[in-house]
Image 1 (cartoon, one colour):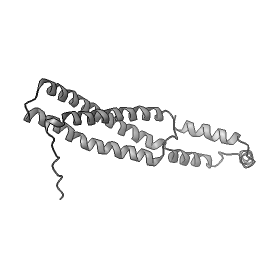
Image 2 (image 1 turned 180 degrees about the vertical axis):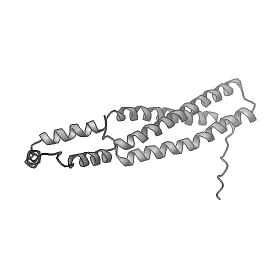
Image 3 (image 1 turned 120 degrees about the horizontal axis):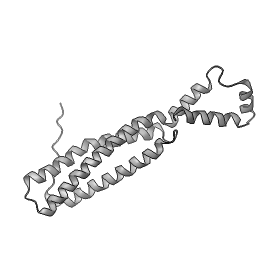
Image 4 (image 1 turned 90 degrees about the horizontal axis):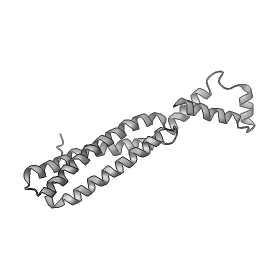
Length: 163
């Protein structure tokens, strides 16, 4: 059984560095969440690889959040803090909570987006396109001649799959 090594706890002099890290992570996480909400409105934007990377990134972040919480807690308990330091730690604790919540929201949204990837939509369109009786003989001929009416219909139907 492998024991997880104890984190390298930082002295209070590292407060501004830790604050910067937390603030930047929260800002980046909020930005990504906003982008994913926009992507969620349209199918077929992300691929499987990208969604898996999003899930991995935010799963990893959620594993580190308890370390940040513990670091802030240790400073409160073990160090005689100035009022400014105490206020900053309190602010950071709220930031970490928000970061955790947004990361959790991203994971939830990513699980929804997993079903709307380019690959999933192509698979569903392919299945419905080749279902018996779905494409008429005339549609096949038009498609082979390069006329685009069938392509427009397939595109519209693929969009409807995830509306």
